[in-house]
Length: 366
Image (cartoon, rainbow, N blue to C red):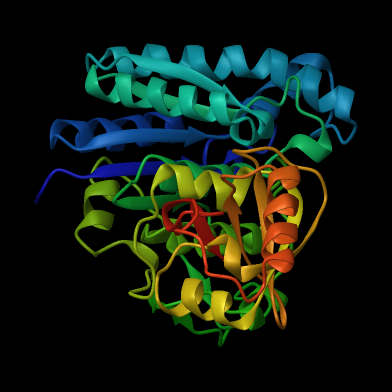
């Protein structure tokens, strides 16, 4: 088997007991399986939930807290418990873990996004095991990923992983809820996650976690759109991750031939950037960038909204609505002047080709 870069996501329910404490038997099982992947010379990035779940009992909460301050306090206690447990277990296999705590701001800020990428790449180059979790201690609701399922999907695309493995307490996806319908049929392989599938699932997670099956479907949809195949399911024993890579996992495999890997810069534009304005293009420009792989030139722009600078990201609208996003090579003032000049010089000899408004390498279609 060729060397692969694998993101393994472990949810709270797969790591803790009903009281919210770290389950040592479950932890040992995961550690042994990751160590087996590493022994086979695969690169592994672990996205691990469990900080809030591991911490709330120490604070005297009878169950997972629902307030922001409660979750943040539980995470501040539980994260140290969690990483210490990982360090002790992985040391038996001469594996050194590195803790990385991320928030949405680390992705939306371009410089921090690049720094996070560089850090993870350096750790992998040095043979260190990155263990990533959302920084629940400081995150507020509007700045979160929602759950670690989505975080694992974004990380897998971010580092151009060969496989995302989402471990859960259910052995994959079914055509209906197997807990309510004994005749529910398990889906071994999917080519896509449809809107109908998302509508048929719920957001309910376990008592110690936040991610229900809907969140896993959304994560799978995101990861596959970034060219990363996904497995959702369960397993037991030190060979479970190797068996998943061999195609023998107890769960559902999801991959699509319609999507290919997206470079890191375009991922940032597509998923993390804030749009600073709007650009409206004519039909010819729309067809050129959508169907012919061309860059957007000034001649195709007839209207702009908002104030933006060179290097900002804007939304691009065609005849029938939003068609994509891109990083501009003009400020809004420069582009307004260009449109005005073109209108005033209509019918005159055209100038030499201008700099692209949005280069095709800085463009993503919606």
